[in-house]
Amino acid sequence: MTSAAPSPAEPTEPVVYEGQFGPFTIEAEDRRDVILYRIGLAIAALSFVAGLLLFLNGGDAAWSLHGLSACYGTLWLGLGLSLWKIHIYLKPLHRLLQGFWLVGGVASFAIAHHFPEPFAQTVYEHPATLWGVGFTFAALTGIYFKEAFCFNRLETKLLTPLVPFLLLGHLFGWWSDDLKLVMLGLWAIAFGIFALRKGIQPIPPDIGDKSVFAYLAEQRHTTAH
Image 1 (spheres, rainbow, N blue to C red):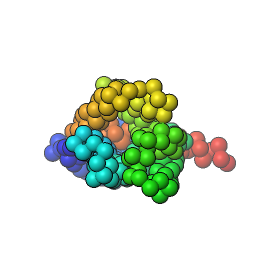
Image 2 (image 1 turned 90 degrees about the vertical axis):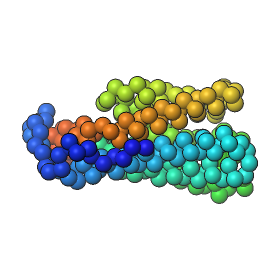
Image 3 (image 1 turned 135 degrees about the vertical axis):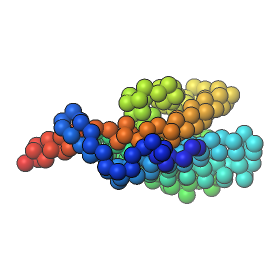
Image 4 (image 1 turned 90 degrees about the horizontal axis):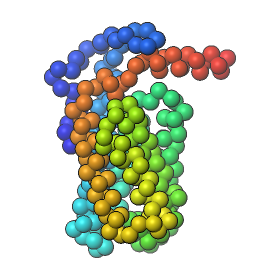
C-alpha cells in the first residue's frame, strides 16, 4: 500500500476553513488521525490479500490455515485502529461500528479457543460461527458504506453489498466454493484499490466539516441538560 503521509502539497500548519456552522481549524492532530485511519485500512487490506494468497498457495495445509487465521487477527487489529480514528458525524453510528468490531473480536477469540482446529478452518466448516465473527465484517462494511456515501467510490460501492452477500451465502449455503472464491478475489482486489486510493487522497476531506461535529456535540449537550 502507498504511504498515508501527506503529500508535499498538504499544509502541515493549522488551516482555517469555512464550515456549514461557522469557521473551523484543521490541526496537526486531525491530520495524524487521518493518517492512522488510513494506516489501519492498509493493514487490514494487506492482511486480507495476504490471507487469500496463503489459501490459494497452501489450500487446507496446516501452515496455510494457521497463517490465514493470523491474517484475520491482523485485519481485526487494523480495523480497530481505523474505527478508533475514523471521522463520522453521527456519534451513535461510530459507537455502533466500534461495538460490532468488539463483539466480532470477542466472538472470534472464543471460537478460536473452543474448537481444536485452526480458526479459519472452523469458520469454513462451521458457518454458524459467522453469527459472531460476522460482526467484524459488519464493522468493515460500515466503513465501506461510509466511504461510498461520502466519496462516491466505485470500489466501495461494490464492497458494500459484496461482503454481506458473500458471508450470508456461506452462512446459509447459497454459494458454491468456486463462486465464493471468485467473490473473495473481487473483495481482495477492491479492498486493495480502496486502501491504495485512500493513501493518496488529500487529507482534509477525511477530516470532514468540524463545525458539524461541534454543532452536533452542542446539540447533545443541550438535550442532556
